[in-house]
Amino acid sequence: MNPIRLALVEDDPEVRELLHGYLCQQPEFDCVLLADSAESFLRQLPDLFRPPQVVLLDVHLPGLSGIEALPTIKQRLPEADVLMQTVFDDADRIYQALCAGASGYVLKNTPLPELKAAVLEVHRGGAPMSRAVARKVLAHFKPSPSVQPDLLSARERDVVQAIIDGLGDKQVAARLDLSPETVRTYVKRIYKKLQVSSRTELMSRHARGHL
Image (cartoon, rainbow, N blue to C red; front, top):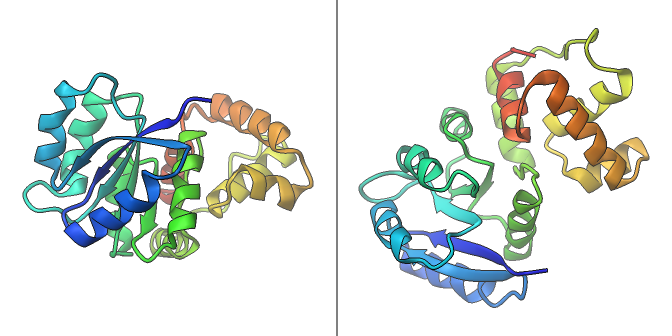
């Protein structure tokens, strides 16, 4: 398996060096771009031989914030996953990031091994989100508990609920006593039925009460 091409966008030099020193030494990653602002990241993109597959993007950046830059990044890199990282756990800011196309949202106090796991998960199609962040979003928007019961089977509704609770494939499998492969099959089927393309979109629709 080829290393995941990773870009880091972080304005704090100490944090940036910490992330670079840890993540870029991992055999699973190939750090192709390091930037201290969204503007610098966008300027460097055309010079890359191969674009990043995952972007670890700080929310609070000088100039364009991570959330403000997110639509442009997604336009330039439609296949890339953007994992937001911040000290903020404000539900409105999190929701803005998810609606703008973020694939996941982690807090800066996340231990480095867990951050590595989040990058790997988002690249596999997951939507990593710390439990604290997930609770903030769900409590703030008070989503409807119903998930189109006539459209989904009971087992599919169980999988949807597990995703909404912020669980990854392996955690969903453990909760429902299924194999991860079976969970992925259910997820694909749910996407097709609900006409969504990602876990982030599913959670956003649920947060707005549209399921």
